[in-house]
Image 1 (tube, helix red, strand yellow):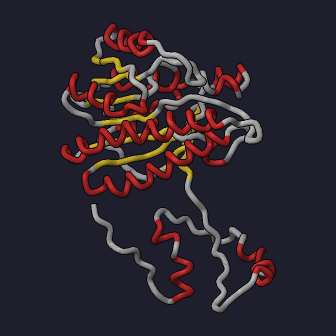
Image 2 (cartoon, helix red, strand yellow):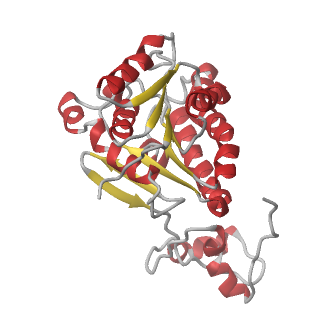
Image 3 (cartoon, one colour):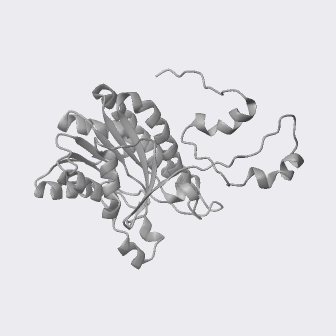
Length: 305
C-alpha cells in the first residue's frame, strides 16, 4: 500500500532547491497540499528571490498537485504557518529543512557567521514549529521532521557554528517528541548526506552525483506519514542507506565516598570501557547505573503540560 497524504497539509522549509525540493515534490505526488517555503537567497544567506519557491510550486501544479509558495524567512515562522492556514486551513506535517552555510575555522569565525547559522537553522526551526504547534495540539495530530547533520553528531573542521546549531535541532526534537506524545505529535530527526548547494563545497563531484537528494526523501516521507512507527529517533540517511543512530553509555564506575581526580584516573579504563554498554533512550534510563549503585530511584518532579 502506497503512503498517501490526501487532505494533509505539509510545510517544507528551504524547499526551493536540493533536499527540500525533493521532499516537496514527493509529498505533492502523494496527494499532500504543500507549502513550499524558500527565501530564495544564496548558500551563505545573502539575497532573496521569490521565483525560487514559485518555480517548485509551478512544477508541482504542472504535475497535477497542489502547492503554494511562501518566501518569508524561517525566522518569521508565524508567517510561514499563516500561509498554510490561509491556503488550506490546517497543518499536519512540518519538515524543517532550511539552511545556509558560513564555514570558517573557529579561530577565524566572525560573530556574524555564528549568528546567521543559529538564526536560520535552530531559531528558524523553532519559530516555524512553535507557530504550528498549537494547531497540531488542537487537531490531536502532527508530524515533525528536523534536519540535523553528521557535522552536528560527530563534529567537522570549519563548521563549529553549523555543528552546534544542528545538534541543537536534535535536542529540540527529543523534547518535542516527549511533549507531543499525548497529542499524537511525533517528532524525529534525519541527518542527511546528499548532493546539494551546501555539500557541493565539501564533497567531490563524483560523490555528489552518487548522493541524490531523492535518496533521503523516502525517510522523510515515512517519518511524516500518519503510519510513522517511531518518535524521538535519529536517522543517518544518504546514498540509499538508512540507519538509526543512538547514544551509547558505558557501565561506568561508582565511588561511594568522596573521591579525587587521582582516584578516577586509577579507574579510567573501567569508566570508559564500552563492554556491556547501555543504550539509554530517555533521561530515566540514562540514570540506571546510578540508581543501581544508590539503591533508589531518581525520579524527576512531575512536569506541567
